Image (cartoon, rainbow, N blue to C red; front, side, top):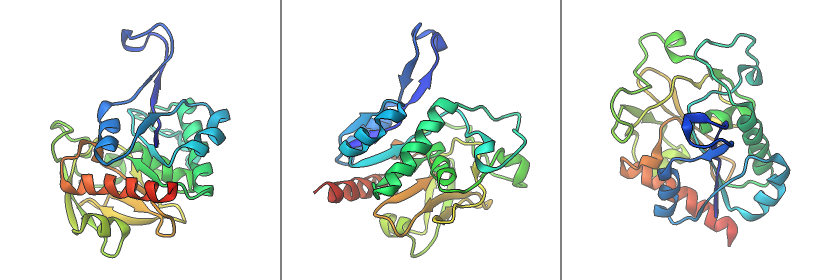
Length: 238
């Protein structure tokens, strides 16, 4: 059983409901099913975290069209492109820290990878074009179910062991990125412009954050990562 963090919208947003509502893109769930897991959407309620962690075998921190509050990683100025959702972020940081305490397999996707890094004490680039000269189009103009650019994967990393190659093509939908990895995390992938595309904690069963969206499964490598995550969760449950 794999817990997935949803996004949350206010009442009236997009004309869907006059009450607050959760939203989760379908392929976050179907990719977990394809890998052999049972996905469940988590309520963003910190009081339920002990019960949640007692029941799930793995945690997916999903992405979203928002950013982490820069004050959480020590920045005093907020970039004009930054939008925050404190309600969701507070929950995700809390459940991530609690999940790390019991070595629950964690997979952070895009903003979820950034969240994992911040929860462990790392920092973020608030807006890539402002800090990375001649950066790639990390907010790719083509559809998200197509590749946007290539990445280089670090040899002898867990990610390398999973995908079995030092290069992959990935889809890309982010304007922020990891700046300084948290003390417990090491870089396992970079884009050609130097932007960090993945981090991992080698001492844990499965603790990986990636900057792209493997739930679209545009390559065999994406599917392999998801299957490795489910395998770690299954071994912990048995």
